[in-house]
Length: 458
Image (cartoon, rainbow, N blue to C red):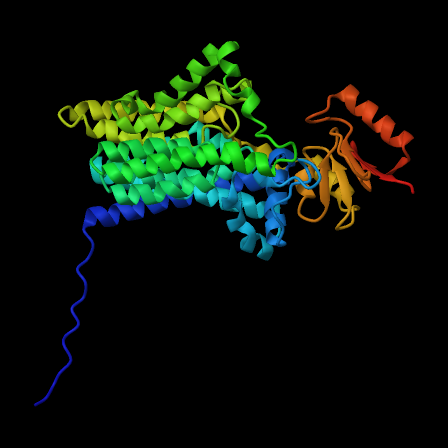
């Protein structure tokens, strides 16, 4: 008997719609990644990044990469990053940073993570509503002001949360509830307040039928936030407390109602208000709640990175809201038009628009002068640096913030910008600081185009 091998039957091709969705979603993510990378790296090259916060996160990751506990000298001597915010996820960057020790490594990771979040959003919109919805949702997320502000302002741990939320919420919307829970659970390792977001996702999972799974996730989320804020962070904080507790609820007794209302309207506008039709919008409530009840006005508006985690929520809720409107397909087209119009009209107001500026590409002539001065600082030195100069040094020196008093020995070098004092100093307070440093024995080593380097004579 002759035994012949069975014929190899090729696998059937993927359905065209699935293949189209994959190509479209990854194409959108690739384009966004390129834009995010360009903006963040160009900003860093032009001295538009800061010690608070890129420098802080690089110090933490550098410490992890060197086998340390994530110490952040910019926050104080022996200050662990986990004593400020509960973000153990940063330790995942240690191997990569060890291979490529640079602040740019963090910016690259952030750009890629934020871009990847577009994949589940675009794919979900394509599966539910078609190509036009997918393009609208991809633009609404990827070009959103919340993501643009995040890319335009340093690096932050919440970049890990954005794709996790996108994958989790799409899974909730498609009733893949176990997958939704598995995507949501790691949020507990990203930042302490996100446990409340996890809890809301748990409530939704329970409401959609997986009661035990949802209840367990909700309990884990609430317990995670309570444990992080009440025990872990205070135990690791040099002052034995959670530094942000004092601001909570203070916002209820301060002005700012108009700013908060404008933030909510700016969140809803790119969804044409249809996100309100989806229960998934509830996932945005914990973040808005802690921001609006804070006494820190920076949390209330559309600045900085604070809205990054809201962008995937709004777009997934938008797609879900439109999908609930199936009997009026012509209105869906109107919604897409409104969404795209709002997204495009807001774009010039936020950092991604800088890519259209020739100045962004030509660079800042003063940056070369700054690097000429900074290159005189030897590796391993201790430096008190201006906020905008600190992240240029955190990868190879021990940096503290010029203008902040730290216990312990005086730094070997002080470097600052005499023309444009930055946080936390004004022009007059910087002048007094420099005079005090000179009186303490510091002398000028170099100066170029307003950047001044001092060292102490021992």
